[in-house]
Structure formats: structure tokens, C-alpha cells
Image (tube, rainbow, N blue to C red; front, side, top):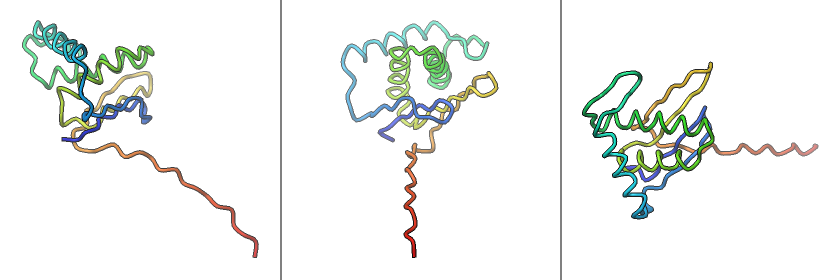
Length: 127
């Protein structure tokens, strides 16, 4: 299990969740309530799923996360990120792309996020 979940929006890291830090009780309760609501069924990409398992739930929550990020709703985005980190323990990255006015979401269970390292250029010394 990777301890970090990183959410990227158009290639830029927006949220990081460290699974080593325990969720406060009220947040864990909120996630349980989210699951209870999803037990009644969810809509994923225009398809109603009556009894969603963890895969469709992750897709649904990731779509809610993308919507929250686009709307600037940080509290909702954080809650959706917490859900994905807690319920999808192998999930390493959520890659959201809004290119060409569309929206695509890739749930990456394989690759840990690697922070970009700055490249430093040193001026040449004159001979």
C-alpha cells in the first residue's frame, strides 16, 4: 500500500493525502455516510448502477472530486480525496484532465507520484 495519494489537475498536483495520518472520527463517520448514500445507487457516466461495488464508487467519487476542484470547493474536494484514500488503499494518483473543454479521469493504481525536481543552471565562468 502506498502511503500517498496525489490528485493532479491538468498535470499539476492539487491535493496530497498521507494515509499514515489517521482520519478524525467525524471524517470517518462522514465517509461511512457517503457509502450509505451510494448503497441506494449511483450514476456513473450516465449509467445508473443499483448496487455499486468499490470500482464504480471510486469512479463516482473521483467525478465529484473533479467537479469540486473545477468549482473551487476545497472542502468538498478534500472530502472526496479522503474517501478515495481511505477506500481505495492501492490508489496512488487521480489524474484529472480538462483539455479541450472535456473532462477525463484516470485512476492510477500502479505509479507513485514523483515530484518534479527543479533544474538549476549555473552561469559559466569566463575562461
